[in-house]
Length: 317
Length: 294
Image 1: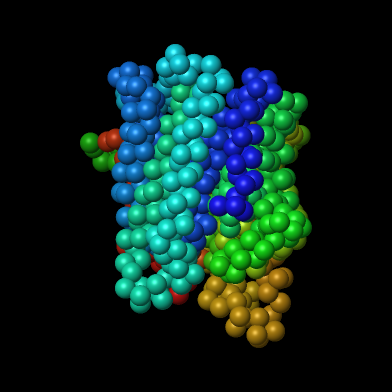
Image 2: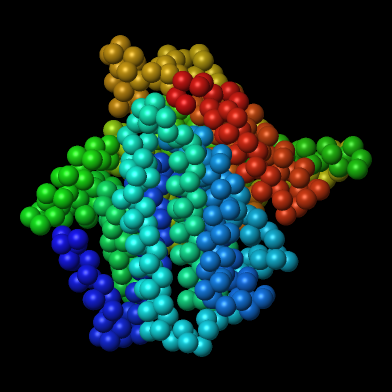
């Protein structure tokens, strides 16, 4: 564990953060954590399984609505809501994923997109249950977590726990089986591994954690809207992962820090945030393949050996 | 349900399908030849509508204003398409799928915001010339006469593309490139130039589609977001790179929408995605596509 000392530093930094910055940046930090969890869960499909999902927002949205509906309509306590969010998103991922894992490449991307839009239109049109276009308002967190700082610590706790679980999954034999499938699905099949079943399980796990991220979002925003599920929301984790670098486990988290921080900063003085981020996306795609983490690995000694090893393990991307 | 209602729904589905065909044919052509899924296709379509509005606005005193504007808007978009291909798309031919998708996703954000910057947030409305302003009657059922024009343009583009692909030398090269780029380039045909031409043609049709769409209702920011995924559905159902498939796919999506709106209005769009998912699962290369790429 010696080489992960910097993670400990980051965690301590995250703990003292609310003491040194104002409330606005605490809000930004909560968003970074939630979107980071969303992006890391996306990267379980993208980075470890090698398939691009363009409908990951569906599970994020389902998670958000599960918590939102349970809190608004049944006043269920928040921790139970979050568990329900994971289960609801997991079931959704099971149904959609069952079909998605039969395809690869561009077809996988489009089928996930089609299912994502299916979910979006169901939520959008089902006025009596989801509130349709209006979304759900009045998702009030419990008194204990009402303030920005306390909700931040709660989110930090949940997200850290979720990241640790995903970290162990990625380092487990299951995680390495996913890497094997990414590198060569046929050879993996020859080893006697049921490739589709493994891919489906991975898809469900990724969906569940996206659901958890969505569940955290509702009480933070006090509302949820169907746009959480829409396909351009699915582009956000793709971008975060590419800017941060899909190879490292924390790449998407770094992408989330950059994306969310920039958004908070840029929207402060211009309404043309999409233009700004669009230009950044194009720039990153054209000139920075491998993302920020890739750049850091090239330049900084400490990370270099680890990066090279990762690249040897992950020759495809 | 009587026969005239069915007929009027059929016509409305036909015009909707034609609209989708105009957008999806360029998308399908670009994907079939260049293997690049252009997320920004519908955003360029929307830009075509705004361009049409501006040209019409400048010429609104003349009766022919709208028709000239449609032609000018398509040409303007062809120029923009050329610029995008040469400056951006050309650099990512050899990249992985996610990076190509992200690039066109970034383009959506940039172009969408540029539209907002240039034309503002207010909806734009084009007053139609008298020829296509009123309804026409089929068996006593009123039908928007402008949609007749839409259907005619759709057929014209379908026939024109068919003629280009089947009867001309360049069309043959393009069709050959759908099957094997390596083979085409081995015959000494400059692939990058073919790619540029195909991309410009695709965006030209998208601009035409946008300009034709412009006088249908008001032109609104964000119209492209719903349209682009429906165009994907059309291409998936018909099969990437197949003109006939795109045409049939458009008709299916248009008619499914027009008829399901009678029985289950909330479910019309949901149904389209169910059809698309079903096709992708049982036949990923679409109804008329070739399974080679699958």
